[in-house]
Each structure stands twice: as C-alpha cells, then as structure tokens.
Image: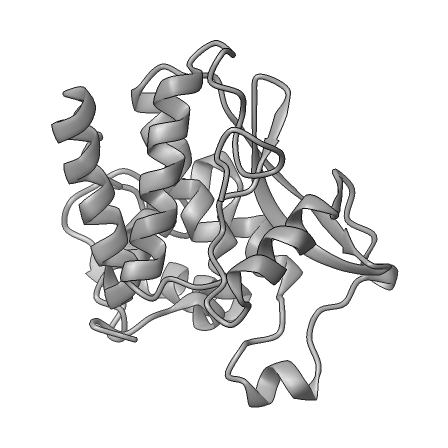
Length: 229
C-alpha cells in the first residue's frame, strides 16, 4: 500500500509529507495488529489528536464514499487539501481493498435517503448498521474528549491509541495530551464530585436528572462496559 498516493496519504514532497506518511503507515499497521477494523470515526479522532499535537493542519470529514454506485457514510481526513483515508478493514483482501479505495469517489455531503447503512449480510458478519446520529455526535469537536475516554473501554481501540502515543513520542518526541474531561456529560457544568455511569464507569453527571436525560438522548447507544471487545 502506497501511503503517498490517493487516498492513503499525500506525496512526501508536500509540506509535512514525510512525517504524515510515517504516522499514517504506523497507524494502519497498528489497526491491523490490534484488530481495529472499520472504525473510521474513532481512528480519525485519534489521528486528529496526533496531527494536532504535531501542529499539522488537518480536518475531519464526515461524508460519503461511492464504491461502484454504492454510497456509504464514511469518515476521513483532509490534510493540505488531500483526501486521506486511513481506516483498516480486516475482511477485505489487500489487493481488492486498494483497488476499491483508489477507485472510490469521496463526497463531503451526507444524503440519508441515498445511503447504504447496512443489511442482513453485514449484520450476520457482526458489523453494526451505521448510525448517523452517533457519528454526528462523536465527530463534533466538543465531544472528542468524551470519545477518547469511551474508547478506553474497547480493548482494541485502547491498545491502538496507547501504541500510537508511544510511537509519536519515540519517533518524533511528541507527547499526545492527556485525555481530560471534567464537565457533566449532559449540561457541561464543571466539577469533580460527579456521579458516574454505572455501566461504562466513565460518563460523569452533576445530577441524576442530567444522567437520565443523557441516557435517553444518546448515551445508552454509545455506552461501553469496561474491557469490551
């Protein structure tokens, strides 16, 4: 796989090209090693953190990928006007994966009526249907810290994130900022003595009312028990 070609990276001659290539290559390797498959949302949140710590200009894009007329929602990065898709998928042979991605059309808009969100075949393969509402929530900049906290409960994602932090420090001398979120997950009140979600042990609330409201609105759909696989 060429991490200097569309859509896997940008040419090394571009600004930040060499460093970006090394980060993308290592990220893809670590996703494969840790069984992080088809996790475009979380992967791009982690990569955003790595690039921002490196002071590399980057944007996260939530749009659609058109594969032979099949439009699927997807998340990728835009680095210096280049589309960069670093999401690993374990169920697709490498040659086919490269061919599909190189021939894909990336669009910045989400049109729900035209999207393929999953079916019985993908469900039988253990792949959850794509939930647009969850992705819209997790990709808002103000929610990135919450997502980084939650992914600690998913063993594969936690290992991937930890190993990316080690790589960034070892390779570039860059410390990835510690994940901190000291606000109520519902009303954003700042404090320390908060109630904690009984399932994930991560989401914090200043009151039972805030906890109930957040659970109804979205948290019940994204909550992960510790050491989930």
